[in-house]
Length: 315
Image (cartoon, rainbow, N blue to C red; front, side, top):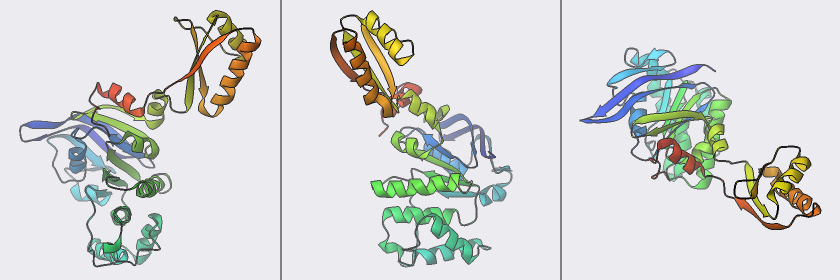
């Protein structure tokens, strides 16, 4: 994948307060990169620096190879963004709003307007006045406007705020398609771990203005135990039970220190596997006392571990 956004040692203060401290990461074409942190962590400040609304104090930002400080126009020509709720002429149709924006930028043909309308799924409503649009439709129209000029990077700050579940799913699908099918590098900030899980390929975790870590979303899901089920079995002879189950499942199973057996199965096989384990133990003449399912960590718990407790505000 091609590197589209590169941030090196970014530091930003507002007044006497340092908001961002020595932040470095990259985003690539074809991926949705999530910038995740509790409210007040510095996400919006970073977004505003990336899109040129705030100047950086120290460090360097390049967008598609253009230095934001030295090649400002070149950098912005490769950037599309929605920092707050997109604003439109409510008395004009969605289509006419896009025409107005295309005329302002220049060099955008009608075919491109039709193309982005299809991309965001507004074909059936694009001729209606924006004043009749739901918030979700306005967000999708905002994405259409932001990508009219073929940007390499699309940046959105908390884009699902205020949307209902259907609107969130629609927008999520649009952003994933832009990345995975159109090759756009999409960067999204959010305080919602659940949204990051369903939308992003990688996630950067921020707390108190410092980038804690960057992870493929699959690593966070794995750390949370999502996709697997864990059971605890108590019985009269844990050592013998572990030996019997080891033979039955073809893997080494050991009793725990407190005389129980822990079993972990893929989620889709969990019920059949625990039934097999129970039957195997009973046939071996062992007495089962309890079989209970352990609750997996929530993604929010993993976030709190990564940030050392700074994630309590995550919602």
